[in-house]
Amino acid sequence: MRFCLPTRPRLEGGGNYFLINLLRYLEARGVACTDDLADEYDVLFITHWQVEAPDLWRGLRANPAARIVHRIDGAAQDYGRRDGPRADGIQREANRLADLTIFQSQYARRATHETFGVIEHDGPVIHNPVDVDLFQPDGDRLARLAAGGPQLIAVTWSTNAKKGAAAIYQAARMHLDVHWLLAGRFPDAPRLPNLHALGVLGRAELARAMRSCDALLTFSENEACPNVVLEGLASGLPVLYKDSGASAELVGECGAAVEVDTFGPELSRVIADRARLSALARERAVTHFHPQRVFGRYLDEIEAALGRPTSIPQEERAALARRYRPPLGWRLRRWRARLRQTIAPTQRA
Image (tube, rainbow, N blue to C red; front, side, top):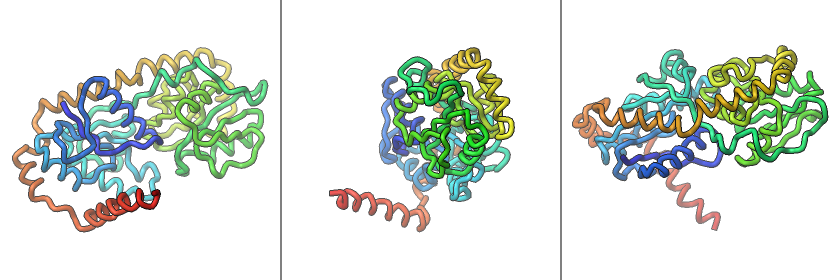
């Protein structure tokens, strides 16, 4: 089996960490991988709206028998992206060619397959993995910021309003005895004595900060499978979360749903039961979200897809791919992107 993963991951964001860890897993299993659509491969693995239909047709011209596996995050318009309608249009077109569709959560399936009608095909739900060796309760910790009061952590890579930063600030103003570590991007954080901005952290530093806290708080909305929740669970943190998106689905009994006005009582209840909830959180992460389990399920589903006919008969697919000509707008965008890639190294030199 040979994979093509045409999206090159960056060192930032949950989707990128998924791809990085998938590549590591495949390499450890001896599965060959390429990021070149013109190479030879059996599986073309794409994520949500990252690969446009013209690119897929280009890959199918070279590999008409390849199976397209489409990993679905969520509906971009549900998530609050400025380019939501366009992004959802991209993944709608891509999904029409997919041989296997995998949803990150039951919520992702409902949002994309039923609520917004973005995704045509149905398929299995496989939650994201979490690095349970890096994110764990044992290890170095940061010094406590204050004696006596609870210490929480909030994490976000994005400044999207749906990440819930405003609600965190409101809760902080109402509970000055609770201290927050803010990891990531919180550019508009007010100057409060109980808010402590750490900035964007590396993975090891984030794991260290998490295990230094009593719980994780997230007011994020409409997230399909928030990795920060999984990282908190693996770190042994009970999770306080807004009941939106897939958070309740992931947390189970290892935390509590909260709003700003219920935050105080729920935090007190969680802190009083922290030892038990911490053990449950760690057990849940290892049992349900271990990379070996998650990626093993991915390979099982992909191998089954390889044994089925393609969604479009191979002969018809090959003929369509040969005749397909990308629209002018797509070709212009690709030409500009290649020009930028050519100019950028020269400018840096």
